Image (cartoon, rainbow, N blue to C red; front, side):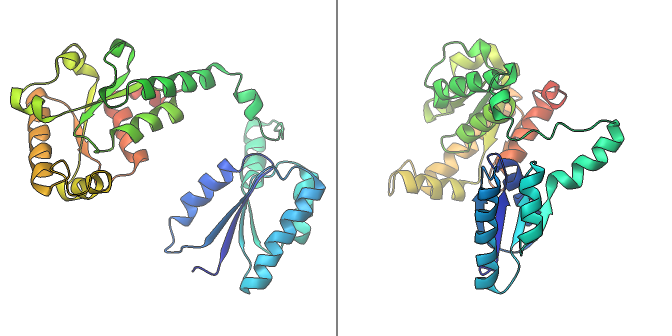
Length: 273
C-alpha cells in the first residue's frame, strides 16, 4: 500500500503518536508513506497541517490515517473540523475514560519534555547513556562494579544497541564485553568479568546472519567468513553454558524483546516503578 499516507500529528515532538501508530500499523501488511508533523501548537500550524493532510487525500484518492496526540483543544478543533483523513485521537480516546476512572480532570498540558528534563529519572537516563558509550565493546573495564548488567557475546551479536536501548528507555547502566578467540583458547571468561558473573547476560546469533553483518563491515575478511563465525558462535555458546550464563539469540528478536527478557531474568525490579 505505497500510495497511502499515515501522519503522526502532535503539539509536542510526535514521538508518542509515532510509537503508538507504529505498534498499530505492525498488525497490518502495509508499507504506507509516513509523515511526522510535530509542534503543531497554534491555529496557524493546525491549518498548515490540515492542508498537508488534505493534499495527500486528494493526491491519493484515499483518506490518510492520522494518529494524533494533540492536547490543545483549539488546535484539535481545527483538525477535527477540516481534516479529510481518518483521525485517531489517541489522547481523546484514553484521557476521557481515565478522567472518569480517577474522578479527576487531566492537566491537558502540551509537550511536557521541558519538565521531564528536570526529573531525576531523566538525569539517570543521560548518565546511563554516557556509561553505555564509555563501556561499549569492552573499551573500559573500570567501574564495572557500577554496571547493572553486562552483556557478553561475539562481536556484532547485538550487544551495543541493546545496552543503549536499556540506557535510553530505562536508565539502566549496561555495559557490553566481547568474547574473542583468545577467550575461547583459554576456555574461560575474561578476567575482568569474573567478579561480576551474577550481572552477565549473553547474546548469540545465527552464524550465517553474523557473517552477513560482518561482511558489511569487513568484506572478504577472515573475521567475516562463515567458518569463523560458526566457530566463534559455537565456542561462545559453549562458554556461556559452562559458566551458567543466561543467554538468548538476537537473530530474529527485536531490541525491545531482548531488553524485556534481560529485565525479566536479571533486573526484574525495573519492571515495577
